[in-house]
Image 1: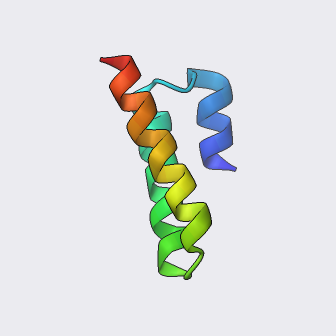
Image 2: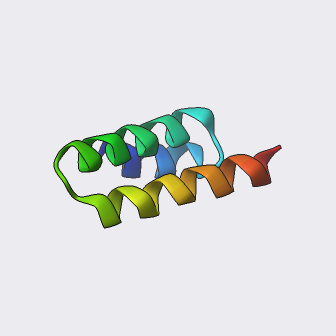
Image 3: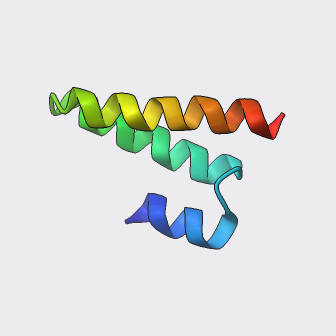
Amino acid sequence: QVAETFKRVLADKHLSTLKSIANLALTYSNQGRWKEAEELEVRVMETSIQAR
């Protein structure tokens, strides 16, 4: 929910949004939810590259 709120309020490319999504990916990874974690990490990396 936090990641979605940041996304809605601050937009996809804002650092706080990307950090929240990366933290969610880490949580998914720790839970063994590898596919979901990977999808989020790729999203964070691609957005970070585009934002530069």
